[in-house]
Image 1 (cartoon, rainbow, N blue to C red):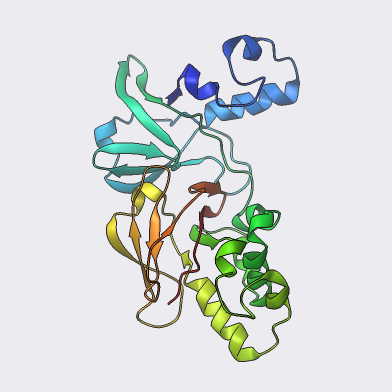
Image 2: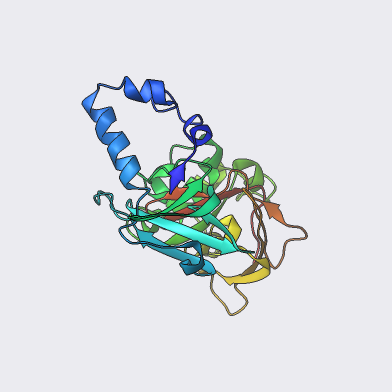
Length: 260
């Protein structure tokens, strides 16, 4: 999977163009660049028509570090292939005598952190983190796994009644029934498989980890974004930013709390 010059130009220096790359002498930067390149290579010849419709994945030749940091994820819908939810195959199937090249429009960066590790320092997700800690669910997202998390912002939580409306109030909750209700709302934001926005379909019904038989959310695919609605929401929440890759899943930041 070969990024264009324009794809490299989106990276910070010194990885952003051929001249700067030629000038790299720092061994750690050289090692990082080598691993990035390995992360773009599958050890087999795979043409675009061999990539399954829907969701699939492949292990790259990058040496494994943390869990799933050498796997790439494909989303194929309407015959358009996206990789890791961010990069699009813009020119497939350039045949070579030792393999095949697919040109892509963004450099693939392997994940280095878990869902929890990404969410905890994000000041825009403080209410979500407080809710995960209060309900003892934070540990679920610190280890291995393959989750999709629709992560409501603090502004989304602020639309709820107290005590669910901000991190401070959530931290102070002691009522067991309120904690149980909060836990079920959080589980309604989690899917036990990895879904990028290009996987979300047209009014697809996806089963969450919430309790009960009516625990599905409704989703709509998008290009660099997506939309999701809970059963008791009046309108769809939009994902922005979307497709944040973690070692144990993917995060979509949304502007509403999904209500079961």
